[in-house]
Image (cartoon, rainbow, N blue to C red; front, side, top):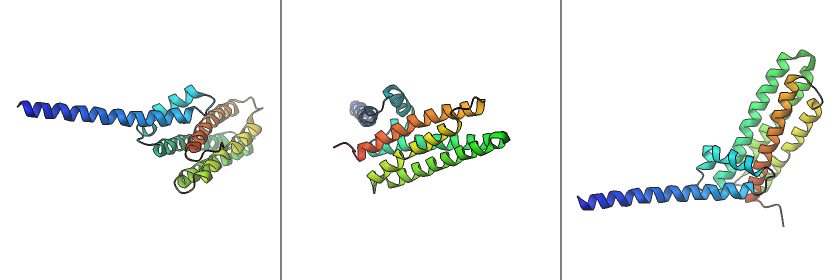
Length: 178
């Protein structure tokens, strides 16, 4: 009876220890990413709240999760701009252009995720060019005062924060600084 209790205690200790190592690995990667982002608090909060990033056991998994967060949000923005274009005939063309920009962001982030293992430098580039599209969206609707344009602008500012996280993440695999 004593031996099985000791064995059980050892098993529990090992399980807790392994969990600590896993959390420690993801925390180190998250900290490393967020050190290179202007809004560190937002970065840490975003990555630790996203289970694939928080439970990552290595840097590659954390980087992949950071890209996925940005891609997922870009897809939500694309769907919103598509819906908005249908609902606002007077500004349909502007909102369709925004939808196209968000579609290009989604595709670029998918490409970045796909290139992560084979070409981290290409992955980094794919993430970085997303800001060209967010700049275009800001130029298209930034001066408008309607509710839909204001919502798209808020979404675009959030998208820029997520792109910054994804870019910092890909930098971990392909440092751009000498």
